[in-house]
Length: 271
Image (cartoon, rainbow, N blue to C red):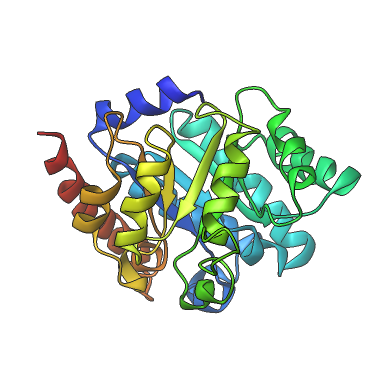
C-alpha cells in the first residue's frame, strides 16, 4: 500500500485507527484454548469485529513468538486472513527489529516478503545498516522508533547531545537522509503531546504511528491537535483497551464496541 492509497483509505473511512493485535496467551479466554492455533482463532474473531472501525492492524510479533512453532503458525494464519478478507487494511509487523548485515536482510525478507506485511517497525540505533535493508522492498514501509510512549524513553531517547539536539531528533534527521515520506514512518508516543507537536514541525509530511491512547493514558484530542497534517498523517494505535475490553467469551463483541467508539470520535475530525 503506497502513500496515496493509505491517505485515501483514511479519508474514505474517516478513520485513522490501528488495532494492535497483542494476543497475550494468558489473557485469552479459556474457551479458545482447546482449539488449535488459539492465538489465530482469537485474532480472527477480533479482526472480524473491529475491521469496520479501523484502517490498519498491527500484530505484535512478541506474543506469537513466545508460543514457539504454534505461535509462528498463528502469526502466519493471521496475516493471511487479513490479506484475504480485508485487503484494503494496512498491516504492520510490530517486530522492532534492529540488527545489521545479513541478519537485517533476513528480518526484512521475513516480514516484508515472506509474511507480506505492508510495513515493519524497526529500531535504528545500529545506524544505516539497520534501516537500509528494509527500504529495499518497493511498496513497503519502515516504521522507525523515534520517541516512544513508555516512561523510560527518557533514559535514552530524550537525552541531549553535545549539539543540544536530542537522540530522537538525531534519529529522525538521520532517517530522513535514507528514506522518504513514501516508505518511512516514525513511532511517536501519544503520551508526549508537546514533543509530538515539535516532531511534526520537523517532519510535516510523514506519517506517524502513534501508540499510547487507551491503556497508556494518551489523549486523542491532543494527538490530533499536535500531529494532524493535510493528509491526516497519523495512525493512532490502540491494543489492550480494544482486544481485552472483555475477558469473557464476549471479547469480540466488546472489542468491536470499543473500536466503534474510538472510530466515531475520529470521524468528527473530518467534518
